[in-house]
Every structure is written in structure tokens, then in C-alpha cells.
Length: 253
Length: 280
Ligand SMILES: Nc1ncnc2c1ncn2[C@@H]1O[C@H](COP(=O)(O)OP(=O)(O)OP(=O)(O)O)[C@@H](O)[C@H]1O
Ligand SMILES: [Mg+2]
Image (cartoon, rainbow over all chains, first blue to last red; front, side, top):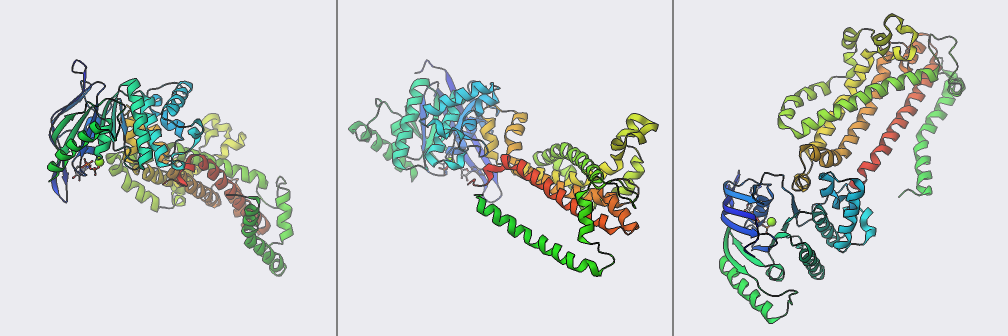
């Protein structure tokens, strides 16, 4: 793993928001993180601990107040080729499903027939039937919308996926199915993934490595060496889960 | 949902008041010296190409064509200029700070008030005088498109388009913009792929408003002395010679054309605003 390229590096990165009500809020503080190519890192933390801010720093949507954030060895400047999947999917409501998925190639200037073909392929890879291609996002269920958001990231060919609690709004069976599909895609293409979640079980199921955050800082880091596919009811799985939970509840106090 | 039944219901209900007005008109006209009979107005409406005998004006159809042409020129000019300026105000803080006060003031002034000024500025010049000079009068249609008139319509239509475009562009969701920037979109791609479609419902509201204003302004401007031709001009001369049936016919045609123009704009907006209807 260590001979692979570093794609994401946080060096003493901090982000401070100046708010009129609460003064200076340090959402992320003294953060050091290395993510190698093809690594699936889950960031675990309670609500408000700075997970979204961390991802936005990596995406170049926020500039660090201190330290630096380097993505693919070029300083993040807002125009990186990055897939960002958020909790609500953030689809463009005026575009039909297929045109939403084709956004990446369209921005890269691909010809219409090429990007439509690519979008159709991505559509089936994220487990959506071709007939939803012409639907508007508001006509879909939450699970389908998240699949479209995954498809958009997939179709853009982004090597770095930043995922901000993408499955948090879904019921458990749908969440499990989408986790499986994310892993299927990742097995094939080996994107570098930073996956934010507040679900311990989700983190243990998905991650190569779990980073625990509290109050803007990294407080613990685990390697998860369980073989895949992981059995959520297996003894090994439950042991890792309990270990992570212990750290998580300790730091939460 | 539009079913045949709801469509018929809509038409019947919508026609109730116009029908009532026509009936009222029919029964009161004989007792009045000013109100022309329904029949004399219908005669004009069903022979729109007939030149009026006792009036220094062209035919009704000709007048309508001239008015519509003038309005379209001014309106299209306002669309071409108004949308970019609106985007600038909506997306750039400096642009907004420079232009917003001016637009607010300009909005408060009736476009008609500019007529004397535009006539001083543009005089009798038209596309015809620009191209043909002294022989301009031989090129009737082009000579009707006096710059002074077009400028006034532009004044009326420009500001509603600017304001609505600006408000649409200002309220684009930041997360939608970010969806494109993380995928590598530059400023121009964000403008064309995110800001414009996202603002298009507001832009179309502006266009419909501007269309209505442009149409009202052109008629008023034609009534103003200094123009020849057009429906407004016909109303003006009809009043001078007390040929009120021509004024009535013009007013009916004005209403119908306004209705059609708005319907066209509404149809055009349907495609780009369909997503708005049920967006959650
Ligand atoms: N744009 C902003 N302006 C001011 N404060 C902000 C801003 N963004 C985040 N914060 C603050 O920074 C802290 C971390 O927020 P962040 O959204 O990163 O947390 P989170 O871990 O993603 O929470 P959740 O799990 O609820 O999504 C919070 O206290 C929040 O109020
Ligand atoms: Mg968050």
C-alpha cells in the first residue's frame, strides 16, 4: 500500500470560520492525513465535529486557514477533478437523470453521443434501470437519487471520491445495497475514497482505514484488515466494531 | 392535468365576462353618439386589409403589423442586452453595487416620459435613413422602425428583464455551482450550465413582464405625436375625426395580440421551467 502515490495530504490543516454569533469557530484543527491511491478511508465523528468541512477542504471548496491541503500533488484551487457526493445528492433539478450523470464529460467537452453512451453505462453500473434516464430528479426516490449522484461521479471518471454521509437518509436495506454497489465499483476502478459517516457499522463495513474525529481534530486511526465481502454478523466484524465504539464513546465525552 | 373537459370549462368561464361586455355594448350602442355599433366594428375587423376611407391611416392589418414589428425589435434588443446585464448584476457584487441604484431609478420612470428625449437624440432616423439616406421614405417598413420609438420600447422592456434575471442569477444555489466546479467547470461553464438554467424561470417571468410592458408602451408611443402608422396612431387619428369604430377595432386587436404574445412566451417558458413545478 505504501508504495502507492499519495493523492490527498492534509498537513497541519485548520479551518476557522468567523461567525457573527459565535465568534471564531475552528471546524478543523491541526489535521494531518495521508490518503494513498486506491485507499478507502472512512471519517467517523459526531455531528458538528467538522467532517463536512474536512471534505470541503479536500474538494477545494474551502481554503485552509492554517497549514495546507494538497490533492494529487497540486494545491487545491477549486478546479480539481473530484467527485463529491453529498447527503441529498445535490443533483441539478432542471436536468433529467441522464444529463445529470453526463455532467462531468460535458464539462470536459466530450461530444454528445460519447457522453450519453458513458452516462448510460454509468446508469447501469449503479444499478438503475435505463427507463429512469428521462426522469427528473424530483420524480425519483431518495435511494435512486443517491444512485444517480454516484453515477455522476462515476461517469466523470474522477479518481478521488469525497462522500459526505451519502447514505444517511436511506432506510437500512437500501443503505446496505448501496454500500455493496459502492464497493463493487471501487473493486473495479480503485478510486481513492474519503467517506464521511456517523455510522460505526457503515465505517467498519466499508473502510480500509477509519479515522475518528472529535472537535475538529483526528483522535484515533484504525486499519481495518477484515477480508471482503464482510459479514456484518461475523465475530471479527463485531470485534472491530466494539473496538471502534470504545474509542468513539471515550472521545465523545 | 389538462383534459378536454377542463379545457372547455376554462374557455367557457374565461369567455363569460367578454361576452357580457359585448352584449352590454350591443344594447347600449344605439343610444350613444360616441359608441359605435357592434356591426360597424365587426365590419372593420373582418376586412382588416381595407384602407379606411375617412381616415388618414393605413389599413388595420397594416397598422397591426407595424406595431408588432416595432415591438418585436425593441423587445428583442432588450432581451439581448438585458439578460447579460442581469447576469452581471446577479453574479458580481461590484456589478450589482454599480448598476442596482440606476436600475431602481430607471424602473420608476415611465418609458413614455423618454419619448421627447429619444426624439431629440435620434430625430427621424430609422434603419431606412441609415441605409438609404434621402430616399428613406421609399422604404416604408424600414422607415417605420424609427430609432426613437425602438429606444422607448427598449427602455420599457430592458429593466424588468434585468431585474428578474439578476434576482434569478443571485439566488442560484451555491451547492449546484459547487457540483460543477468540483468536476472542473470554469466561470463560463458555470454560467451556461448552472446559472442560466437555474435562473431561467425567473428570466422567463421577466420576459413575460417585459413583453406586456413593451406592447403597452408601443401603443402609447404611437399615440404620441411624431409617429405615423401603427395601431396607436390609428386610435389617435380615429379620435381626431370621431371615427370611433376604428378606435374600438384597434383596441380589440391590441388585446388579442397581447394575449397571443403572452401565450407564446408562456409556451416557450414551459420547457425550461417544467422542473420547477414539483421540485422539492
Ligand atoms: N460556513 C460556515 N460558517 C460558519 N460556521 C461553519 C460553517 N461551516 C461549518 N461551520 C461550523 O463548523 C463546525 C463543523 O461543521 P461541519 O459541518 O463540518 O460538521 P459535520 O461534522 O459535518 O456535522 P454533521 O455530522 O452534522 O454534518 C460546526 O460548529 C459548524 O457550525
Ligand atoms: Mg456534515
